[in-house]
Length: 330
Image (cartoon, rainbow, N blue to C red; front, side, top):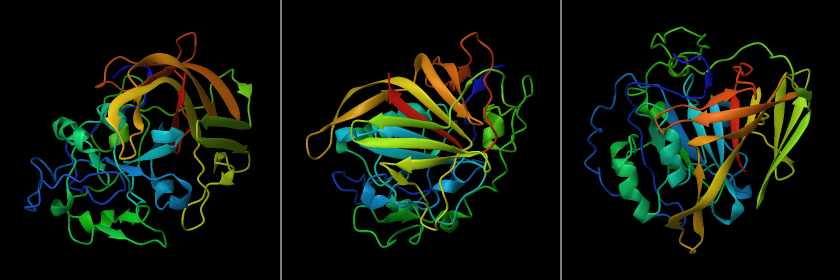
């Protein structure tokens, strides 16, 4: 195990899950309609990554509060989309589910054989998804009740996933445990296996009870709530809650400054899809316990996790609980 904080999730096999359909501007890969599970599926995998819609008509989302990690990415027209990663527990319903982007393929390579649930993808991106080390399964490989449309929303913001429908393939979720320096993972949980480290509040930092991150057409604000020990999330000026009224409230927020450049892919309207570079190094702000910490991040290759350290190279642990990583343009 390396001795620096890593946001890397490892798992040895995947869950059988589905690639579902009909996102606006996306085409669907019809392969796999024979219903056969993907090679190697149904093993001891513990990670499910779901692309979550995040425009106003898609809110409030369902099941987002159960995620261990929430990644915030920029997409076309300066809007945002979320990727929720589930390792310690699977909610009864997740959604609305939307389409994948090229950024996801690089981001997910830090996981071992993850399952990626999404509604579709740009047609020229589908071959890259097929070749990527992720488990992306089209509609024919899921039970008929795994996905459904509803939630009082209109298409394409109304596609939801029921992980319970896949329970025979989903492993028993185990609570994420912090891997201490020098400890080898014991294989009982994906986050433990990853080496993501939680720890006491480090020295230093500056008091910071509100932080706003702006995309060209989206805005995220994180307010520290002392008596809850959490950061309440607001999106585009409105309090972010789940469909059952729970506040979205991570314990740690990482504002990671990265290069966001045009990709070679376009959406149906002809807008260029941005590509967020998550391999490399740069600066970040880590928010925890009502304080902000200057940080450096480094990810040497796509197979590596992201290391977060203080400017002088010391390990920077996170507060236990849900982690949000917001990719802000450097």
